[in-house]
Length: 207
Image (cartoon, rainbow, N blue to C red; front, side, top):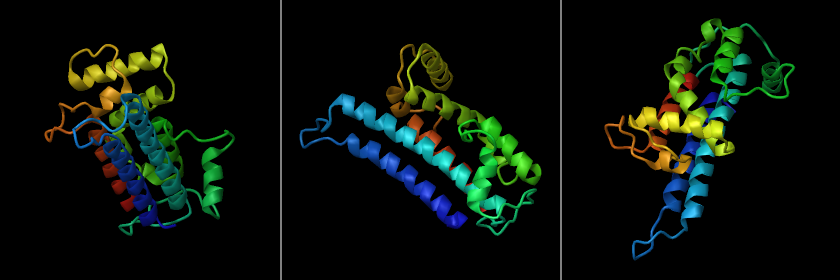
């Protein structure tokens, strides 16, 4: 599967996640929500988590392709320091002695990119450019995966930074669907971060 297909698969996954949220919030002829609130919350959070997983899958797939010598969509060929015989072999190199490589840890993604590619290209400077956003997404991902005082505190800190006012007790559902004041188009927090992921993936895949 070439990089153009890897990018297309990621974009399709993200589009499906956004569509799932939109469809879940449809109303009947009287304007009442079709689904109960508990379902809306679970579907929205699950869709966000699926989007984050799709991002991790994109990183692994694209990195293994670049490691085996595939050029970016633009034709650019990054200078690499390894020559695995297949994508499966490249994935094994990424995992190393660990049980798995955590692609949600973007500091480690940067380190891995610099180990295998000259200057970390094509992952740098694009990962650095959205590093804070990726850390925000990781905070939201942690809140979706398990609820604890630690994840709640981190989520509230993120919400305060986004809205510039304390939002005690905010949950991930309310955060994702709130209008992001940093967006000139009055987009939701989900859409703002979704667009950042798509833009970063596009730049990485094009090399």
